[in-house]
Image (cartoon, rainbow, N blue to C red; front, side, top):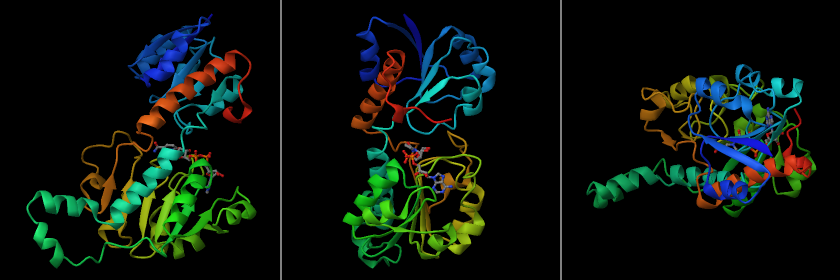
Length: 320
Ligand SMILES: NC(=O)c1ccc[n+]([C@@H]2O[C@H](COP(=O)([O-])OP(=O)(O)OC[C@H]3O[C@@H](n4cnc5c(N)ncnc54)[C@H](O)[C@@H]3O)[C@@H](O)[C@H]2O)c1
């Protein structure tokens, strides 16, 4: 019998899998504060992790721990070095976590390009007739615009199909993906980031946060971009320098941003980006669809069951 901690609430469909399986006991831990995790986690053999940070101070109190199953694919909230040194496996939900985020990028792009917020407010505020007099200089067609996708993994590969469906010209910057794969999917590989930034009307980020990608997009990069360009970030806060982004928007260095993620989540209420009219926001919600949340929850739990049954698919194990 294995003891599993469900760290942070997940959709019931995943928990149902444990209810039906006699090999596992489980406990849902809703309070993901460090103090509570240090107190609660030591007796568990495995844990699922949605929100909450699992650092080495917590991990060293967990001598029985053999596996962490992430509800998601990013793992910047776990101490990967400690896991590697202590032979603790890390699993991700690589099947279910890309369709909704790719759709979310298109949702943000279309919302920004079509002035969704402005139109919605105009109608609600009784300004329906005034729309005709408004210069539409910040509303655009997607047709023939250039998008630079930075990070061509699961999300990037789903995104490209949607972009091509809207007649966007797609450029890809991902040093770890072969040119042939990108061109076979209808994209153009870009050898260095700067070249891509120069031609992009839309910059979309779908890459992991790590020491190399922290602040990958700062004022220097924004200054290379076109004045009417937009940045879409559904990957992780921290990849875009928030202070620089606000500065670039205020000084018309770039024109708009769509942000699903922040360096600190939830963001401070006085974070200037929250009140910047050139920012379209969502609350780290790129996976928040009925299908995605159900599937992620089931995959997270199935991964941990498969791990203890010695039949976990290799593609789900992060190579630490
Ligand atoms: N907002 C959300 O709810 C949400 C949901 C899913 C994923 N994400 C984030 O999106 C990221 C991408 O997800 P994925 O499933 O596509 O991951 P993935 O691992 O399949 O793909 C990431 C890609 O980024 C590339 N990459 C790594 N470093 C790079 C760099 N310096 N420059 C350019 N490319 C680089 C890799 O080669 C890889 O192809 C995740 O790491 C996660 O943090 C966010």
